[in-house]
Length: 235
Image (cartoon, rainbow, N blue to C red; front, side):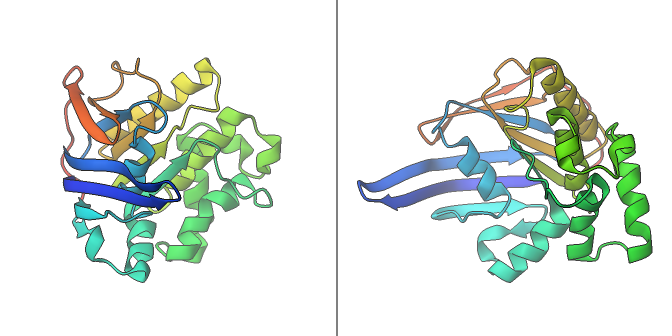
């Protein structure tokens, strides 16, 4: 599902060239739940942005869900992202003037993946799947942090993407709520979605199939957890 070959990413700063990623090789199978771990500034968020086509590699190749991202135009990337990748952010990024259901419907409206008459029903089904259906018609300001993150996960699933990327999805939550969100992501992976999270949390071995550790822009370790059955690859 995901393949990175000799990927580098450099930035030009007032202090000179900064290498955020250095020669990354990484393969992730369909249905795997992978955690990218490392300290702040290690390169894990940059790596996640490359997987989502938000940023471009300086060299090397990034292939996700059958697309060589470095070969796509910005317009093609936007279409690809809408259909193939769901994003979950640390600070939720819900639109404050839209209800929970409307936030979930938004990706469907942009990509027109479902007929208009079906979008609200699908949004309600997804909110029910993540356990916040009673909050469907409330604004984000009326929800707890955990409820907002669950809505954000439902939104990430709106277009039924084969890949979900989560950048510090539990960093703004208490430990109990964070555990529930990680359990939810685990369930998604067990259902066949490829889930990749960037996180500071190292004690998540019980949930993920593999931990990939990065430091100073390089891959330093890839540790398999207790083997989990990998569902049939999603197309």
